[in-house]
Length: 158
Image (cartoon, rainbow, N blue to C red):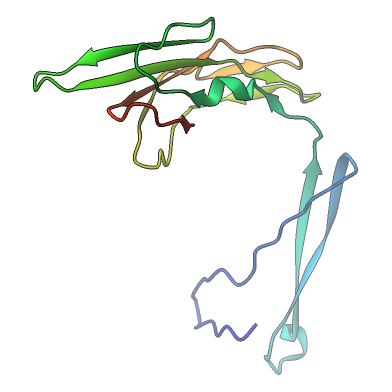
């Protein structure tokens, strides 16, 4: 509302979010009203299509928590150890294995795994099963995420 577009320009004027409770294909039109006085330009009908798929990529939320404590020991899905640097300071390194399970009714293709914002923590993806298609109910090889922290006893999550 109230946006003026210059000739031959582009601008985001709206964001449409479609949240479907019923699975399937849906389509319709988004009607944009303008102040153009031309008969054919007063309203623009923009078609849309949506496909609603119920499901998820399941994982254990426990494996996305990185407890940091002195003398931490390895578990089945993580390792933790202390590393000393050249300046004598120590850092806790925690690795977690995160396994994804395809709970969609269709195949899902994994492309890449990145951490966009680690909130100042030193997280890194060590291993990701890139370019892999998971059939329904398939499990991917584990994603390995490492946290290197120099502040003991501060919990963090990825």
